[in-house]
Amino acid sequence: MKETKIAELRDMSSDQLEVILKEAKETLFRLRLQARMERLDSPSELKKNKRLIAKILTLKSLHSKSQKHKSTK
Image 1: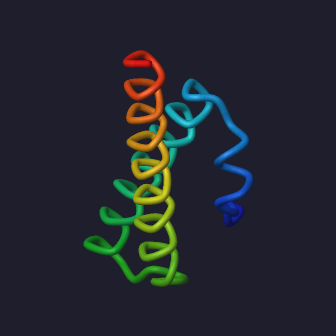
Image 2: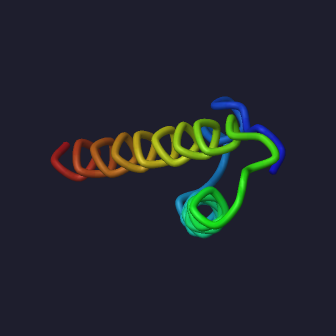
């Protein structure tokens, strides 16, 4: 999976973030299985994937907070 920059993620809609989040979680699941069953080709992929998930969840949280803030004005 290509490393995604935070600026690219910020430009995405909530639906796009949701799709990427789902893909990242599936990839992380497969990597964890592979790590248990056999040796990973690049163990750093686990760390990169976890960071991508964290970035997306953070952006989703910020999106929801900004939506709530806009609705109260």
